[in-house]
Length: 252
Length: 163
Image (cartoon, rainbow over all chains, first blue to last red):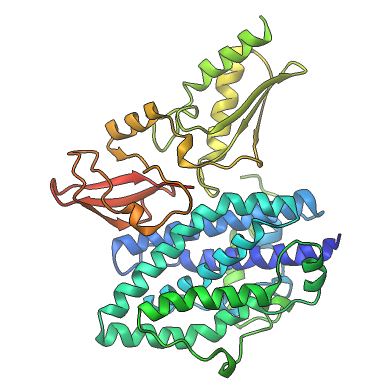
């Protein structure tokens, strides 16, 4: 079995969750209403927990290192997260649209992993599928509500979609060793997930009367999977690892 | 002491290990325990968290270790059972009643995939009315949602259904 390819797949999934988890946690105390403050804080907690579960699979099954050190002491060039998750939280409309596009991508990815030939991923997918449903329910409800409100609310959601869509397409950046994973029945590959994702988000966007950008007319934000990142990642990593780096050997 | 007696003692001890976030429910009420065995004079307990990122898991494991060690005098090994996953049908009817009395609506029973409509009209644990709506699928802890009762005017929490 292609261990490096499985490690790369798990690392990019975990890095996406870790980085977006930290971004979403930046809403704690700042949410536009209390329920949304709690929602983004809860989703952040979920995502950082999911990242930990994935880093543990790397450690226990694929010769990986301690999850804390792997998460907080790696240089930016070794992170495999996509550009979407690196972006600052911006305004609530941006963060909500990012959450909608990202969590639908997570949902199709974990749905496909229910059939994975790699048992640890298959077991984790069973565990996380029900939890992710709350993320997409939350995102769908707010997208619909804010779009149906019309006026500035609708215009801001359309603008947020136009901004986020090319970034979100970068989630599905093709990987070099993907074919080996597909042949081994580990997962169905990025192109298949991308098509299922487009289908699922389209169903919600139509109900919200939002215009989905033409996928053929945009340039997906690729590069994150091979360690090329936006300038936003490095300062975030410095902040995330600041305490651990004070004394990496400390016992908490 | 026979192995059967020891295992019965362990279950009695586990009845006293409460969830730190819902202190009226034990780990057994919550259906978090998936196996109890004695192997080579060590008590092995397998457990599962309700939600994967639950921050109370290591605290609960520590409490299980202490309670079982005190009841049996044996070394205790508590591990996460990766082959099982928690779902709301693991809550016993007695546990659902305890939740209601504590002011938290128990999760609705559902088959198959969760849909948004299943979270509507959750019976209010205070007045029993179903004239309620979901305010947020996220609450004070990962396992709770927030609802509002239009009849008694109370905001209340629900233990979220999980398939």
